[in-house]
Image (cartoon, rainbow, N blue to C red; front, side, top):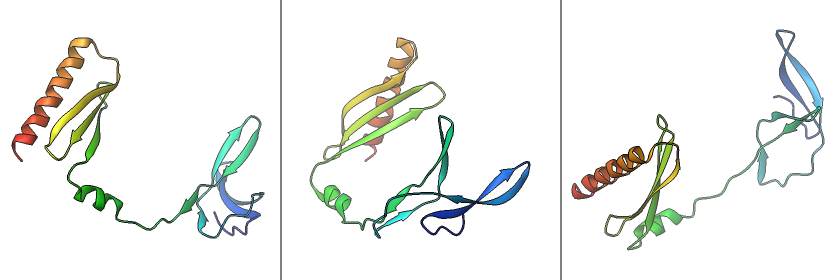
Length: 133
């Protein structure tokens, strides 16, 4: 993408097996100065093409996570994606006493025995890591 002036831009496209710069006209509303347009993507809707620009805005860090972590108790949610067996396990941990609050299966297509074995293995790993602290 080059030469974006707010109403037209040059996109490098593959045309008949060769890369060529093609000028495109577009319309969009005024974007506030604190937002920045990212690189566009082409979206096919019905029989028309649309250029979709992601908008980005810088937000200064407020130290929010540091404040939360310095408090006496907070909970952490971790999701274990077991990609080879089509299962995701969500664990919620209470960090004040490093206890497991809840262990839930979010998605699964495994037989019941395999699911319970996976959950037991997850709990034993968690208990072992808590005893090492």
